[in-house]
View (cartoon, rainbow, N blue to C red):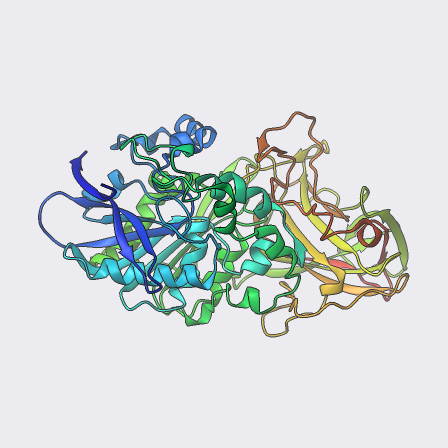
Length: 576
């Protein structure tokens, strides 16, 4: 028997409940309910990480880190039902919620073809929400709560307006699959290519006895039936081929990108200052562009799964859902729309705000000067140039020591005049912080333990600006066409750096590093590994696919021009 029920740990648990969707596929869900009669609101996730795989078994290093640094996560729970990037039902069911985890089609106990973030997945999610709302144990109020993948598809399905969806809390996940996730500045991020076999196809439906088993039920987590390898291969999209074959923001991406303006339900969007590459920009943009009249932004730091499970995170999440799913007048709707954990060199300072970007921001230009290698407060009168080998070298521009403590919180932009020896160039810009003794200050990021202050990327042939979305402090590119460079000819690039928050102490300095490759913090090996990649400041959000970046085009020499008519500069969000 695939589906069955039991009462355990103060919950009614329905394992592998069938949900038949409109194309005839039967998805499978685990449902955790309060004991006894009654109707309760629902918190749901739909995704590919296998609902039967325990956090402890699937992600032991992250679990051990969480337990060692934040033991409160285990308070009041056996943690037996903890599952990667979804809420722990033992923390929520006693508070009068039903937690539902659905295996997305093709993964875990749900058959079908794996096609991440596809319109079919979004339709499945829509139908699962409506199914849950109609069950005897449901009040009909459904909320979405989850991290990363389980955050990204919240934006997608909310834009489709399921009638019974009442609120969403996307925690650290992209809202624009092209710009936030797959192609940073038009450059392919190979994160997804590494992620797919490790986290998704490893739990593909049809592995049967070759897959893992549930630590609780003893059942296979990836289907009872074992399918041949050729059938498994046919039941999943070739992710790398799909992403390589769509270099522009074409219809393939557009149908996978949420129309954020169509979202109407209340939103609590939680992002991570250290989420360069995936867990940052989308939360800020989702908050800013969502059509919802009631929406809130929360920004924090630390590892990208941490605050979701801590008392801090759960308190926020619970107050939000108590208000919108249970109708409790707890004052949530009267709180300021922005909560920031402002980042300092030794921690965070919590502060409420009323808009994003902050209305009192002093947008401050610092001008690049090749002659002195500096970031100058005034325009540089004399033109000069420096070049670097794109595949291996970088240029640095430094501020000198700050005369007073200065907060930078918000988006950033760089205007750069460049020429390439080839018909294109990939530009990587990194904002870095240095102590008075010239030691770099690195930060615990969402996925990398030693990250910089901010990062940005742009393929020069994608330099066309989207005037409707961009601002002087946040250039956004259309990515609708490519405009090759003329070798040796100077062109202007406006580059978006992802948002940041850092209080720069007096005596510290900033450095802008410009290059043609991913940032490397220079720390000695060996460094911690993720997906077999050393964590060197850019985590696994690298841009190293040789087919996307052929050496004959992206391995040339790039020249940066500053001063005079080529006023290259960075725009900093100074908060007085």
